[in-house]
Length: 191
Image (cartoon, rainbow, N blue to C red; front, side, top):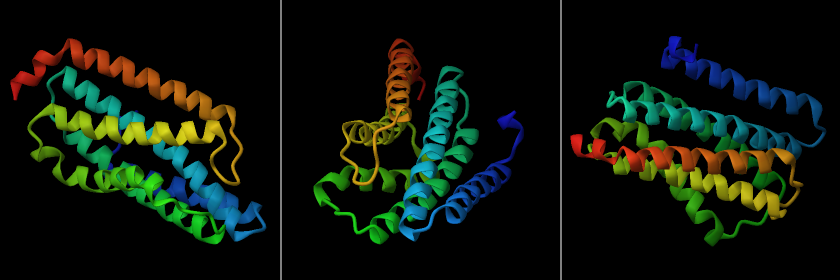
């Protein structure tokens, strides 16, 4: 069903989803810091779903030696919505006076840069290995976020069952896709 939507329609649905997420917490939380804390949290969950779908579509394009036009559209939507998530996150950090440790955010900052640039260069990348670097690196940064949440390292956020489920699911996606990429590595030579 998602394949029937143009990327503009998907972008509209994504922005609408982000607006709904923000609105729910705007009208249900007393403190503005909490509005952005929860908006960032649930916007991040939306980003996780979109990331997994983008990775899946890349996986399918790889298996079928297809073009990356649809993947490009989807990673553009993912990137745009993840910038909104970053806005929520940055405002949450600012409004809640959370401590930022530069060494800890370096990996995430690099992931954000990759998320923003990738849609514009996806069709110029000729070697699949570089696509895999993008998907695995961004995924590992997300995975490490869930590890930190599970360990209780996030100030003002208790670990939830969702974090464990997301962690396990991401590991399974990495293993399943990674195994298939390894077995089908001869397809890398088609480029």
